[in-house]
Length: 284
Image (cartoon, rainbow, N blue to C red):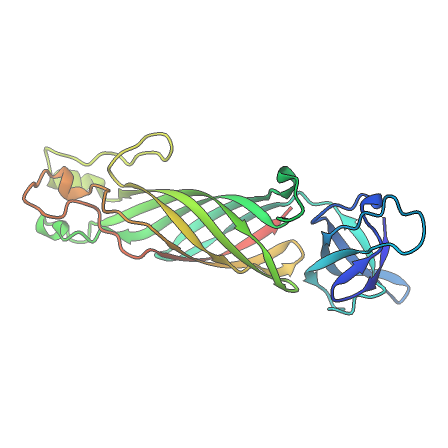
């Protein structure tokens, strides 16, 4: 199926449900240069025209929005559109820069077909995991028991949430998101700490969703915005900023397990509730 673009701003073409066009369907845009057809842009169907009962005469066009502009920019009139199969699946991997250095992996899936709606074309559900290496338990109790510099934590979390893509410019999106996260923190110098507080010892870090513990495990909401920028139609650089309700006040730390009842602060003390990362996203 190929059809001509009849107008720009917004992009329109006289294809629709009769040609099995569906909301958010991906199309490549082609222009003829030196006798050859070359891909010059990428668009998705926004408002699909129902042309199934119209045999002749004027037909309402389907409206498209740009995903990635090529060399022709908004001069799309006269281009040809050709459908491109896609799964609506996104995989992102990258580097966490705040609150400390780390690694992230994100899997997202468009859900508009599952919801059977054309009003939420860019709604996605995502699952995300982060490993943070460099956070410290700032509880002063470490200095009191001679463990200065032994307060390093290994932190990892997993989250489930929703995000929605707004296409603000050709090839640039704004994607607010909200997720629920479970996070674990465990001491990297656990053996040295156990020697210092013997005969007591801190437990092993629990596994999210499987084993619960007061030690080093918290849950929180994380909300923020991503700014996907297209390198190609299906590869994006994605900077992301988020702020969370992250709080370790109920996560028992080394002072608690040392059984020092006279010590006023027995929880893990981790500051900074904001997150910043940058990742590479591939769309399938």
